[in-house]
Image 1 (cartoon, one colour):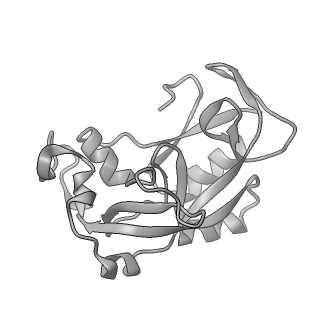
Image 2 (cartoon, rainbow, N blue to C red; image 1 turned 135 degrees about the horizontal axis):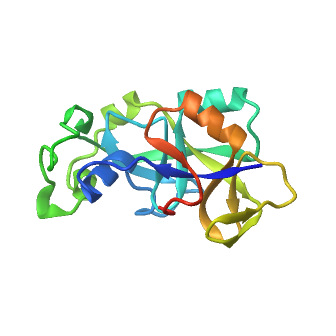
Length: 190
């Protein structure tokens, strides 16, 4: 069986595009075991890797996954802690620069330096963390040795990213928006 890595789509504008797409889950500690999401809105990707390695889905995607036959994970709600209003999806993706740069030039200031909009947070879909089981490990940069469990979305002992089965790859490519990619292991790891 062939396995793949989940990665985010490469965005224009470097780190500025990345933060607009993924938001942040690593900036704040968990609250009562739940991730706290800081991001721009109103756009929310259906599936995205946020922070260092947190896999997030929206309500619609969670329901679709629950109705699928994919295995190896559970869902935890995510707290929408700070949602700033930046509708970057209307910007020209072919432009060398974003429509505007945040104050002080730091990408995270698209979020942190703008006020939280509780109204927008309430209007956006709920967000869920996909919590995966650990299974298998890599013996080198291109070889994945699967453990004993039969899982479709998983983590590995010695690799901080998400590994998916061919079944999950097919399902994701058919059902999820184009902001998450299923890559061969021969491609770069991030």
